[in-house]
Every structure is written in structure tokens, then in C-alpha cells.
Length: 132
Image (cartoon, rainbow, N blue to C red):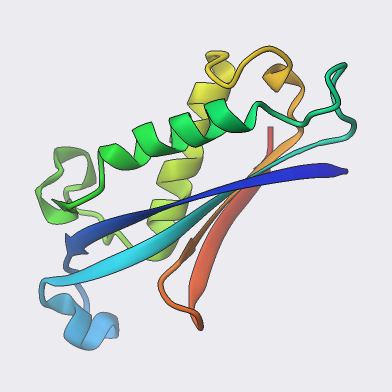
């Protein structure tokens, strides 16, 4: 299995509902390092997994909708605890859609898997991964 990973960052604000979240029920900020890992069984005819430039551009576009935003104010997230796990799945779905639309270039339709990992710090992170 061949893999390529790209990275960016985003800064958000949000709050959580539920006693399990303790002090995080109050509005607070987070800075996430966001890694996207693309996998496929073999490289394409150009010996690549995916066009890295296009992958970086798509990640930046996806994160632009979240970066410097209070997630509590985003209508699509109403009633949701926008946990690290939730955000990983959200970014996964957006990137999966970009792949399906061909926005990562020729050959991206042969991608076998996608993994999104969000690091909250050097000691805590969450991810969502699935086959494509």
C-alpha cells in the first residue's frame, strides 16, 4: 500500500454540551494540526499516489470554512458536539466528495483509502479512516 500525507492547521472556537465535557462546556479555542493521508494499492502511471499540490489546495479550501470560526455559529453543526472525532469525520466527508468530483486530478479515482487525523496537542489526537 502506498501512502501520501499532507498537512495544514486550523484555529476554531466551540463549546460542548454535557457533563462529560467538564470545563470544556464553556466556549474555548483549539488549534488543530490536520493531516490527510491518501492510500492506494499501487502508484499511477506517473508514479504518484495523488497530486500533492491539488491535495494541499483541497485541504486548505475545506479548512477555510472552519478556520477562525466559532463552530457553535455554523448552522450545519447545530445540536452537535464538535469534538475532534466529529471534525475528523466532517473533513473526511468533504475530502471524499472532492475526490469523487475529480478535484485531486487524474488518477485520484483509484485511491483506496483516506484517513483524517486532527492533533489537539503533542499528546492528544483523533482520526477517522475508511476505504474509498
